[in-house]
Length: 623
Image 1: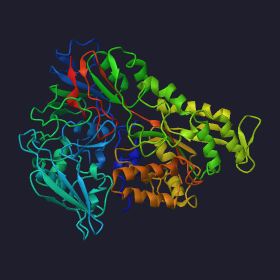
Image 2: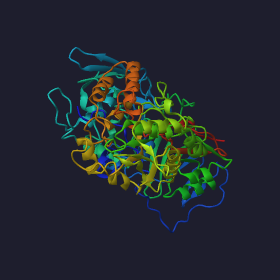
Image 3: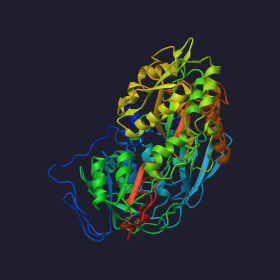
Image 4: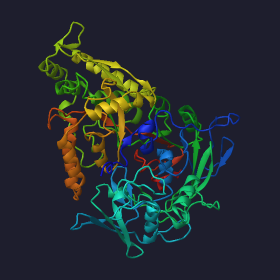
């Protein structure tokens, strides 16, 4: 089923009309800005102790309330709605609702509302039945027990109005009332059966390796009598009569003053966290969370420095290292997440079509130098110095393998050997020249204005020079870069048709990030033959076949090994001369930290929309 593997893995930067409906990450470029009343001055001066009420832009924050500052405000709290799919929205909802499975700081699934791991039972007709059991004692903030009936209600909302295929699945999603950016995995569910208050099962037409990501939030029947009412309720997180929606998480919705703040209050009926990262297994220690929407990083930094904000999680920028990381009262708690920065090659380029040229670049790149020069000053020793050598598994995941270890370090002589084997001769200006292809000069583009990425380009360009490779920086401001270069319709047409149509000359090397999660199978979508999400011009039938085979494997370890082998198509030449499509550089955490002068405990969060700064809000506590 085309596209069924894609759910969480998307561009870390929303790409206008091409991928906007499916983007699951907060943009690093042109995000919707918050509306700030210029008559209300920005905070200044040092705050009093944490037990004292703090004046914040004209509003008071109650004692024992955690203040999180952020530069992006949700446009709605309906995260599944493609018009409002921002990471900050998911981060807020993590404190309000729980799902069958959660995502740990190691980017792995763990049973959250479930008592134990689900049981996958293959059936004779190729379908699978997944048997599940809820934990005992689950309850909603309104006192209702959380039962299998709530799971069934959630499924009915997702399914309402959908045009069903003969096998009972929702097909392409036509007619569905519930607004959702994607229905991958949901589109394979044939039926859901409740057998007791804690036991239920669902049948899938075929196995879906990412099935644990389904039902990542369970809804309460009070959210609405039908899907249209649920859509409306989720926007402002209130029912039609103004009642805040019931919570299964550690917080309950408080109020939302658009343009200024959103507040949450503690759920005293919370059944407790079972996250492997959480130390507190009971109700939250703080009374609530006050989220301040400040439109600039400078205002966020000022709020932290003045004591009128205690937690920040935002896109990495050098000024954060220069200001906050140098503050003795500020603790950086960033963690490596599932976003990976990479150099992607346009295989239709006359130089880059030669595997020896791609290998020469891989030899010349020194990821360790980049990590130490650029990332370590910002995040500390969070990332492995060797960088990243895999596109499917990240360094903090147990099954990770570094497939680019053979290219480690600045191997300039090996790079030159590869180029000369490909027929290149070193020119008088120190740049290699090919008798047919000409001078080895390659353009690299990224999101202009992103200082971290621009410095990354400069470092790598300098690394290429001794190897006789000229790198010309060719950026386009903000997210416009994507539509101007790798995801330009003409560039994608060239990729799909392998140069027969479109324009293969719009870009040479692209530098950006892909965002993934605990199930890495969606990574394949970016490299499958003929897919519009594949900008590289990579087309390998063996890769396509193995990608489908990996996704169909029921055994977790067997499937993990299959994905590792699949990665060798992309990051090495072991599988053939069309390999080494990308050079993964490193994981890219968000800049996450807290004011340790007032907080004695802070929940460490993975950089993923399935987790975030409030995923372990139960662990935050004041001194």
